[in-house]
Amino acid sequence: MSEQTIISNQHADQTRHKANVPAIRRFNMGEYYSRQFPHDVENFKKTGRLKSGYSNLDAITNLYPGLYVIGAISSLGKTTFIHQMCDQMAEAGTHILFFSLEQSALELASKSIARTIAMENTADGLSSLQVRRADLSLPHIASAIERCRNYSDKMTVIECSFRATIDDIVGAVTGYIQTNKVRPVVVVDYLQVIQSPSENRMTTRDTVDYHVKRLKELQADHQITMIVISSLNRQNYMAAIDFESFKESGGIEYTADVLWGLQLQCIHEKLFSQTNGINEKRQRIREAKRSVPRKVELVCLKNRFGISSYSCLFDYYTKYDWFKPVPPILKPDDIEESNNDTDGWMTIPKGVENELPWDI
Image (tube, rainbow, N blue to C red; front, top):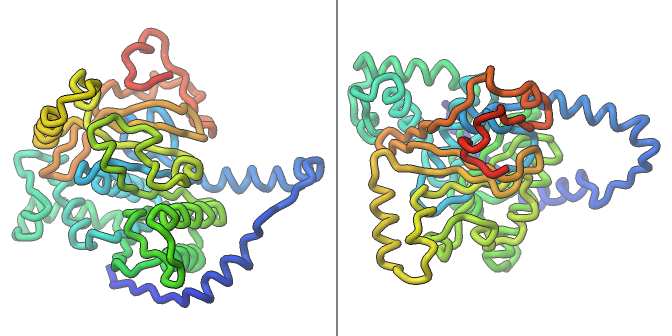
């Protein structure tokens, strides 16, 4: 992968942004149904329905053009979770544009290789650091590299310094679409690291809120699937994820089309429903994070495209940067045809309603 440098003129970018995106659009619905509606439906169909590559999540819903936000406590594995999802989508033929504001292309590539080795044979498993120090000609490593290389033309990583602004991201996404004539899945890792506009003296909350709105506008302008990784308030580290966890920015809760949270499964234990026992809770979280595999849960708090509340369980092998879906995982024959429709809904088979890890 060649090094990519993003150069933007901030004032010019903001001027173009304001000129191309009207603040209001008025529709006479009689004319809309006759003229614009069929066109918009065809455009929506062209965007396709994406599968994440996580079989338990894909049994519940598809991914659609929209703004997805995922939050988790520090070092739980949110970057690895989304990066693995991107690898899986790229291997299926989807273009990925991954903005990494913290990790280098070397680190991300090493994670992909380590995961691939472990998935083929855990006995040969290496950590991403060990991959970077290993003899790359060893058969199991060379085989994993070749598999990653097979879909690498679909994956573009953009390393961003801590000076990267929202205009840099907007410019890079727009340029990619114009150059490649495709709409990629765009990932921003992560929201709170995007540099605030230099001419504005905004609070941290205002800055994050501004960036969420700009990212949503970018997503809507190009009708792309965008996944934004977010940190959580430290007050929520010992509580189950809910809307309050994202209160660093009021815009996240309201602007996101889909709101995900990644949390330790132990957070549902009786200990965490008690008002006291802070030290015991901290100790339990440390134990849960050290567990092999780490027991992790993806929860959906908001979903404009289907089931509004669900969860999926994963075994996270931290050494190999590998999230392994946990049953119950429905077989394709068990899923009603309705889940193949564009609404993303799934009809639950009779007899398994109480076995599935989500709330209907």
